[in-house]
Amino acid sequence: GIVLLTYGQHTGAPVSPQWPLGLLYAMLTALCFAVGANINRFLIPQGVDVFSLLGITNVGALVVLGVGLWASGRFDTLAAFSAGEVWRLILAGGLSGLGSIALFTAFAFTTVASATTLKSLDTGLASLIAVFALGEAINWPIALGLVLILGGAWIVQMGKVLRPPTVTV
Image (cartoon, rainbow, N blue to C red; front, side, top):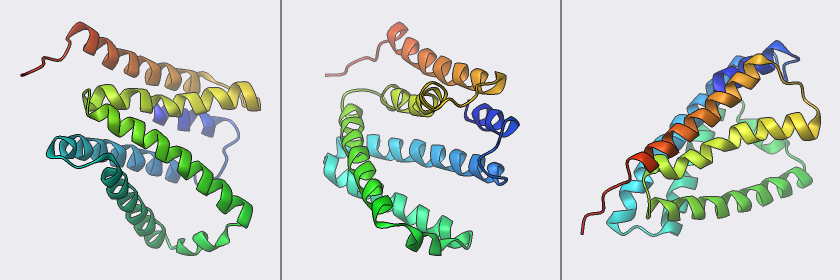
Protein backbone atom coordinates (compact mmCIF):
# COMPACT_ATOMS: atom_id res chain seq x y z
CA GLY A 1 0.00 0.00 0.00
CA ILE A 2 2.80 2.44 0.89
CA VAL A 3 4.62 1.65 -2.36
CA LEU A 4 1.48 2.38 -4.39
CA LEU A 5 0.79 5.60 -2.47
CA THR A 6 4.33 6.77 -3.20
CA TYR A 7 4.13 5.72 -6.85
CA GLY A 8 0.75 7.44 -7.18
CA GLN A 9 2.23 10.66 -5.86
CA HIS A 10 5.10 10.36 -8.33
CA THR A 11 2.77 10.01 -11.32
CA GLY A 12 1.26 13.40 -10.48
CA ALA A 13 3.38 16.31 -9.38
CA PRO A 14 6.02 14.80 -7.09
CA VAL A 15 6.92 16.72 -3.97
CA SER A 16 10.61 16.11 -4.69
CA PRO A 17 12.65 14.61 -7.50
CA GLN A 18 14.15 12.39 -4.80
CA TRP A 19 10.83 10.58 -4.20
CA PRO A 20 12.42 7.09 -4.38
CA LEU A 21 14.51 8.06 -1.35
CA GLY A 22 11.24 8.91 0.43
CA LEU A 23 9.98 5.41 -0.35
CA LEU A 24 13.16 3.91 1.11
CA TYR A 25 12.75 6.03 4.27
CA ALA A 26 9.08 5.04 4.56
CA MET A 27 9.93 1.36 4.30
CA LEU A 28 12.80 1.72 6.80
CA THR A 29 10.45 3.53 9.19
CA ALA A 30 7.86 0.75 8.85
CA LEU A 31 10.55 -1.86 9.54
CA CYS A 32 11.74 0.05 12.63
CA PHE A 33 8.16 0.33 13.94
CA ALA A 34 7.62 -3.41 13.41
CA VAL A 35 10.83 -4.38 15.20
CA GLY A 36 10.19 -1.87 17.98
CA ALA A 37 6.63 -3.07 18.52
CA ASN A 38 7.80 -6.66 18.91
CA ILE A 39 10.59 -5.65 21.31
CA ASN A 40 8.09 -3.66 23.38
CA ARG A 41 5.61 -6.54 23.39
CA PHE A 42 8.42 -8.80 24.64
CA LEU A 43 9.54 -6.35 27.37
CA ILE A 44 6.09 -5.64 28.86
CA PRO A 45 5.69 -9.13 30.42
CA GLN A 46 9.24 -8.76 31.77
CA GLY A 47 7.97 -5.91 33.97
CA VAL A 48 9.27 -2.93 31.98
CA ASP A 49 6.90 0.00 32.50
CA VAL A 50 5.36 2.07 29.69
CA PHE A 51 7.47 5.17 30.37
CA SER A 52 10.71 3.19 30.22
CA LEU A 53 9.53 1.74 26.91
CA LEU A 54 8.87 5.27 25.66
CA GLY A 55 12.40 6.23 26.63
CA ILE A 56 13.91 3.19 24.93
CA THR A 57 11.84 3.76 21.79
CA ASN A 58 12.55 7.48 21.54
CA VAL A 59 16.28 7.14 22.15
CA GLY A 60 16.39 4.37 19.56
CA ALA A 61 14.48 6.54 17.08
CA LEU A 62 16.85 9.46 17.67
CA VAL A 63 19.87 7.23 17.11
CA VAL A 64 18.43 5.85 13.85
CA LEU A 65 17.53 9.39 12.72
CA GLY A 66 20.99 10.70 13.60
CA VAL A 67 22.76 7.86 11.81
CA GLY A 68 20.51 8.33 8.76
CA LEU A 69 21.15 12.07 8.61
CA TRP A 70 24.88 11.57 9.14
CA ALA A 71 25.11 8.81 6.50
CA SER A 72 23.28 10.96 3.95
CA GLY A 73 25.43 14.00 4.71
CA ARG A 74 22.43 15.99 5.95
CA PHE A 75 23.15 16.23 9.68
CA ASP A 76 23.26 20.04 9.40
CA THR A 77 19.54 19.94 8.55
CA LEU A 78 18.80 19.83 12.28
CA ALA A 79 20.03 23.42 12.68
CA ALA A 80 17.89 24.75 9.82
CA PHE A 81 14.57 24.88 11.72
CA SER A 82 12.95 28.17 12.80
CA ALA A 83 11.62 28.65 16.35
CA GLY A 84 8.03 28.17 15.09
CA GLU A 85 8.95 24.92 13.40
CA VAL A 86 10.72 23.68 16.53
CA TRP A 87 7.60 24.50 18.59
CA ARG A 88 5.38 22.56 16.17
CA LEU A 89 7.79 19.62 16.28
CA ILE A 90 7.69 19.65 20.10
CA LEU A 91 3.87 19.74 20.05
CA ALA A 92 3.74 16.92 17.50
CA GLY A 93 6.20 14.93 19.60
CA GLY A 94 4.05 15.39 22.70
CA LEU A 95 0.94 14.21 20.89
CA SER A 96 2.91 11.30 19.46
CA GLY A 97 4.01 10.44 22.99
CA LEU A 98 0.38 10.25 24.12
CA GLY A 99 -0.34 7.96 21.18
CA SER A 100 2.64 5.81 22.12
CA ILE A 101 1.40 5.47 25.70
CA ALA A 102 -1.93 4.25 24.35
CA LEU A 103 -0.21 1.85 21.94
CA PHE A 104 2.14 0.42 24.57
CA THR A 105 -0.75 0.00 26.97
CA ALA A 106 -2.58 -1.93 24.25
CA PHE A 107 0.43 -4.28 23.95
CA ALA A 108 -0.28 -5.44 27.50
CA PHE A 109 -3.80 -6.52 26.53
CA THR A 110 -3.59 -7.82 22.97
CA THR A 111 -1.26 -9.08 20.26
CA VAL A 112 1.25 -6.89 18.41
CA ALA A 113 -0.60 -7.43 15.12
CA SER A 114 -3.89 -6.37 16.62
CA ALA A 115 -2.53 -3.30 18.43
CA THR A 116 -0.41 -2.00 15.57
CA THR A 117 -2.96 -2.61 12.84
CA LEU A 118 -4.89 0.51 13.74
CA LYS A 119 -1.60 2.44 13.92
CA SER A 120 -0.87 1.39 10.33
CA LEU A 121 -3.99 3.20 9.18
CA ASP A 122 -2.38 6.61 9.80
CA THR A 123 -0.64 6.53 6.40
CA GLY A 124 -3.93 5.97 4.61
CA LEU A 125 -5.71 8.48 6.81
CA ALA A 126 -3.08 11.13 6.03
CA SER A 127 -3.60 10.50 2.31
CA LEU A 128 -7.39 10.76 2.62
CA ILE A 129 -7.10 14.00 4.60
CA ALA A 130 -4.77 15.37 1.90
CA VAL A 131 -7.36 14.53 -0.77
CA PHE A 132 -10.41 15.90 1.04
CA ALA A 133 -8.97 18.76 3.10
CA LEU A 134 -6.08 19.92 0.91
CA GLY A 135 -7.48 19.15 -2.52
CA GLU A 136 -4.71 16.78 -3.57
CA ALA A 137 -5.46 14.62 -6.58
CA ILE A 138 -6.26 10.95 -6.24
CA ASN A 139 -5.35 8.51 -9.01
CA TRP A 140 -5.59 4.74 -9.42
CA PRO A 141 -2.27 3.86 -7.67
CA ILE A 142 -3.18 6.03 -4.67
CA ALA A 143 -6.71 4.57 -4.55
CA LEU A 144 -5.34 1.01 -4.82
CA GLY A 145 -2.74 1.77 -2.12
CA LEU A 146 -5.51 2.99 0.19
CA VAL A 147 -7.56 -0.14 -0.52
CA LEU A 148 -4.54 -2.36 0.26
CA ILE A 149 -3.81 -0.56 3.53
CA LEU A 150 -7.46 -0.65 4.65
CA GLY A 151 -7.84 -4.24 3.42
CA GLY A 152 -4.73 -5.37 5.29
CA ALA A 153 -5.98 -3.81 8.52
CA TRP A 154 -9.39 -5.40 8.02
CA ILE A 155 -7.89 -8.87 7.36
CA VAL A 156 -5.74 -8.72 10.51
CA GLN A 157 -8.69 -7.60 12.64
CA MET A 158 -11.01 -10.22 11.12
CA GLY A 159 -8.41 -12.90 11.82
CA LYS A 160 -8.60 -11.96 15.48
CA VAL A 161 -12.41 -12.12 15.45
CA LEU A 162 -12.45 -15.47 13.67
CA ARG A 163 -9.68 -16.93 15.84
CA PRO A 164 -9.79 -15.24 19.26
CA PRO A 165 -6.60 -15.54 21.31
CA THR A 166 -6.53 -18.21 23.99
CA VAL A 167 -6.01 -17.10 27.54
CA THR A 168 -3.77 -19.25 29.72
CA VAL A 169 -4.30 -19.08 33.45
